[in-house]
Length: 269
Image 1 (cartoon, rainbow, N blue to C red):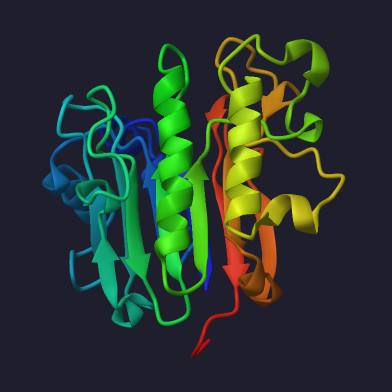
Image 2 (spheres, one colour):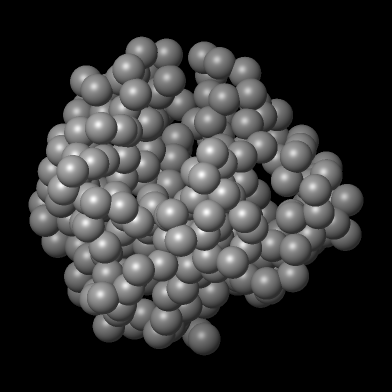
């Protein structure tokens, strides 16, 4: 199974600049998109239709949108025909008491889960901590609780909004700690707790211990060597043996987020 995760920074712009078609040409079985920036599922369906795909014929769509701010956040998981008959169920955990009823008005549109035979696929757009430090604490704790409530292994993917180690940041990591969202010590500690308390692994770091590939380049920099790794595939430790490969498309564009890809053995493949 080939899974691609990508923060697209708006479905309309992503369609109009040709990047949606380019992403679909990667022929993934599942696409996990973050920051779709719409509250209307039909806008995503229309965008995919313009790329030649027919809803519920070529793919199925599972999405969660912000109920409190239009055009904000939003996550969507697109399951292609090659695999969608293996979906068992979909989950919107922010609707439950497990996670994010409403954090300062930004609780929705950040997580959607699809259930397969072997695992849950959890697509997230994690809160940027700028001005929302307490919200980030709550998010991390509730995400841990939610993942631990699942009754089978999980793959967690998306924009985690943190550089978890010095290898995930282009500059002087130690001097940069606590200078910017994504580099705050409580974000780094929170990420480590997610890994440790859910008995999971950062797949890229496990497979590339010395890797310095980045998934995000600041628009003000526009230098591919000045990157951050903010986008992750994380999986339950007992699922890691099924992973074949993970990669970051760090030449995708000159700035902003790049797609990340996971290839994993899946029942029936």
